Amino acid sequence: MKKLITICLLATVFLCSCGVKSAKKSQGKITAEMAYEGVNNYCHSEYDWSVAKENPDIMYVQMGEETDSAYQVVFRSYTGAFVYFYVDKASGKTRMEEYVPTLNARSDAGTIDIFDYFKYQ
Image 1 (cartoon, rainbow, N blue to C red):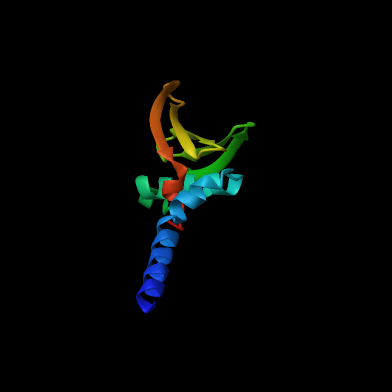
Image 2: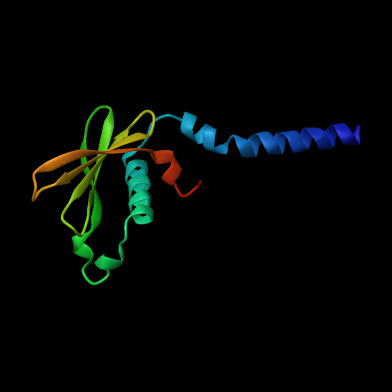
């Protein structure tokens, strides 16, 4: 009987701990705060912010426009380029588009899963 209880407890702990990420993904709706947090964390992990120590206004992350299906979050690089993140409200899939104003050039910059950049992970 003791073995059965121990096995049940271990199985419960295992199932609960493994399901944290998938459970949070399946909760559905992404909020504006979640979109900002995920993109901000991504930008701070992928871009060199040391150049902005002297002048923090040259690099930033801010919320952009919102549609029924997506949030736009904007990253401005110290180079003057912008990366627009389009965060799908239902799935968390995020499309990135880079825009260089001085060249008037837009380009696809890939995709990320916003859930990969939340602090609870």
